[in-house]
Length: 233
Image 1 (spheres, rainbow, N blue to C red):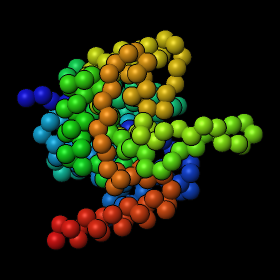
Image 2: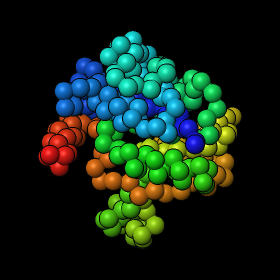
Image 3: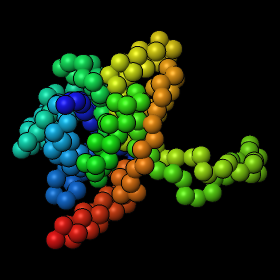
Image 4: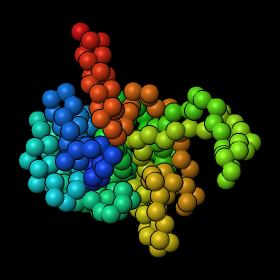
């Protein structure tokens, strides 16, 4: 059976969150936000190891309080870089080997489901790269320099990117190497794969797979946790 490695990207400082600690360490359901993703990925049989990328001055905390939770498959905690792209590349370099597939997930998306993660990994294995995304439900307007609306963009072709995103190891390694050579910075790893001509498969994500960016998002996360607990009962 295929074994994939996971990189959980949690190297940001979360300036918009308005807290002394980075948002990935804020409490959600009584435990650090990052711990939810670590628990989910550690519970997947397909995941052979997990590398966490954290702010440099928080790596000791992550190793002690999060990386050692029961059942953890975390192999290393490494410091992040100045941008997300550098942080994820640090995580890639820290993997113990060359797995068939590498899956990358935001440490502040605590509600990615096991079926979604597994599907993204399967599609990456089949196509080279894959990501969770949601089709745009609203009409999208493009504004010109004067604020006047330019021709409306057909929403049927537009998707909102989420994580997890997964890649064959060779695709991801080449994508990072090319970006480094070109001095190119991307907002997500799928764009790096696109730049080298890799096929990237869209996998329908979930509206519940939210990214915790603000304190309002954290309150929504608490509500989602309660709803999940209610459904489990």
